[in-house]
Image (cartoon, rainbow, N blue to C red; front, side, top):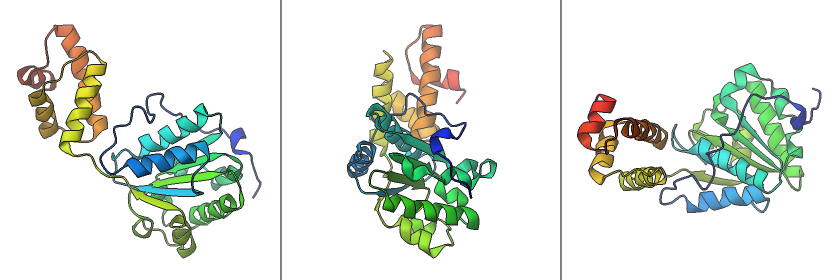
Amino acid sequence: MASHSPLQLSLPVYLPDDETFNSYYPAAGNDQLIQSLQDCADGSAEKAVYLWGPVKSGRTHLMHATCARANELNRNSFYLPLGIHASISTELLEGLEQVDLVCIDDIDAIAGHPLWEESLFDLYNRVAEQKNCKLVVSASASAVDSGFVLPDLISRMQWGLTYQVQPMADDEKLAALQRRAAMRGLQLPEDVGRFLLNRLARDLRTLFDVLDRLDKASLVHQRKLTIPFVKEMLRL
């Protein structure tokens, strides 16, 4: 297999400007995870970090934030979501050990695919031989529960630090919503915030998207956020 520089490969993946550590609302218990990711970004961490949590738990935000921090420090980073593995080649993993920081999201998407598992295992081994490269991977479950069939790969994924992304409690989500609203010059009363938590999907992405809609509606109709207004705008 030919070796390519990852910086020369074209990949239609772009990091969102608003997904940084500053815009991340951490749940209690995630402090050490965040510190380890920041250490990876600046090059002072362990060789590899494995983080896992369910869909919409904030894993991807953390991966984006880690790359963004590395870029701010003028360190090369490469972000790859393996949910798109069907449309790309394993050749994309060749040469990634030359990069300062490699973040591979949704690695369990390739579980059970022998060629991808072998290629990922080889990448782990190449990273281990490099002085500067740090590897961060994410999945929806622990390494042993993600459906991988290559025992050596499972072992490698347990080689570095492992963290489970801790979910936010409702009070933490409410506080995050109120801070987000305040940043927009919008007042979100507690009763309205709890109404949204009880009626909508509870992941922050959904809640923030709805808050953005309500912010625009509030400006258009010149009305404050109340439960009747929210019900009217969202047809709840």
